[in-house]
Image (cartoon, rainbow, N blue to C red; front, side):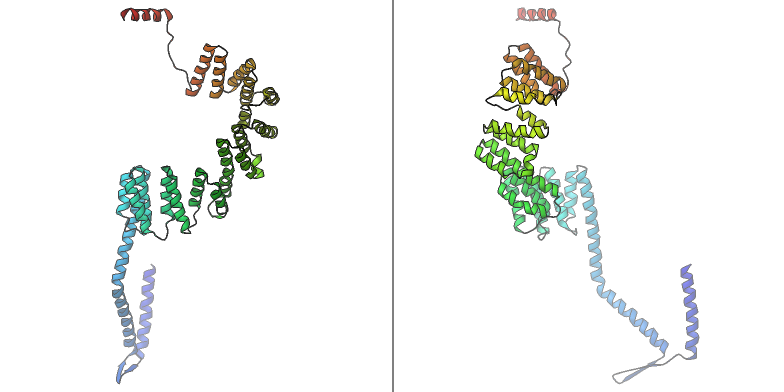
Length: 413
């Protein structure tokens, strides 16, 4: 409809213009280098239009080769994008070999070849082909020398997966030396420093963890807080009292109120032989807030006055009468105080409320030392059934038939 209107309007305008030009067609004269060119205004207008289209044609002819190259390049990029999508789907479907072939075949024609090579390296890694994986990573690095972070981070993650901490550390430090700030690389670096116990380097990393975009404040807080927890555990493992005190003094005051840190200090102090310090910290914590890990640790104290520690633990029973963890700890303290009957009662009550393997083991050991071997074996059987989740369905053996069969087997031999 619109096209018809436009055509009609053009015809009307053309007719009006023709009437005007018939009355006076106009005159144009051009002089160039001594030559005079004369023509009507209509002819001059037609020449101008023809010249315009001729210039456009020459420009298109001149640009044709470049446009052809750009069109071909766009087609290759589009095919590469489709190959990348297909490769990702194949990788997700577990077709790792097909994904690797699809991605590497189209990598050179891609806008970002490094993306193809990185996914191909992941596919090779899933197949256990370390040599091909390293080859694709090298090609990705070669294809994107100015943006090395994705390649080096993947390389570091692969090293960490295979427990190659030093290789991962060298890769990440290479990225750090290049000045490329990356949230993922910083978190991986912090993880390696934790695993290798390089606390000073980890603490030096703290400001960057807090200021780098992409790292949540909670993640940075947890990473830094873990430094102090790991140092406490390491001091306990080394059984070094002076080292433990240094580690505890370095813990920020807000963290010293958390149960995990108090329990870590208490267990480290017990490993160093300082049970009174452990008892004081645990008691202070439990009087403010109840914590199962702290209650368990309290039951493992070995004090010179076991009855005094037992009295303090039993003083919490009225407020927590059905706490199986507290009953288990009271049983352990009773055994150290040589109150075996009371310890047995506490253990049986704890197991009746909530069975747990360490309680079964303690009860079996106690019963065996008390001479009740059959009852100890029964407790171990209960522990095994609890661990497996069910008892074996074995039919009862009739004693007489079993005895006769055994006698027959002996005569035959």
